[in-house]
Length: 163
Image 1: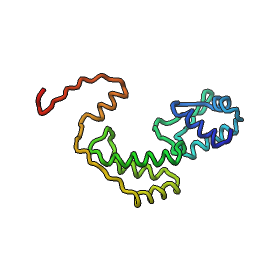
Image 2: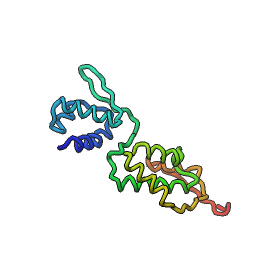
Image 3: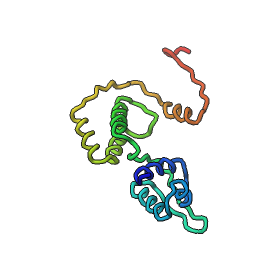
Image 4: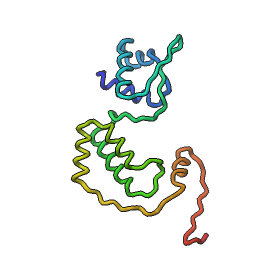
């Protein structure tokens, strides 16, 4: 397995873990201790938030930042995410507590320069007609969170203030 493939697989392997140790990487990828240490250094360099705990039962901890590594997306997926991001601008309320302009700025900052330039060119050339959705929902965030946590809701719909 090439190093780039191994690093990408490690990112996926570590995505749902809070900690790991060298032995796990050595056994999983059939690599030497020095290669495992270099791979951990590579993971840190690309932004994976890792810190080590020293001692007999030492291990590597991952900070729970829920950062998605941009290296895991193809160019087509990056373009698709960008256009999905543009559609958010048409909504007055979303279940998120962040503005779409902030998302767009962060999104462009983590992209490779070539893709950033291509998205900027698209922004200048392609214009999307946006239909502003005038309806707002003060409970949208709670509904989405409830779905994720399998909560049960009782919903009453009032049409023209009639029950």
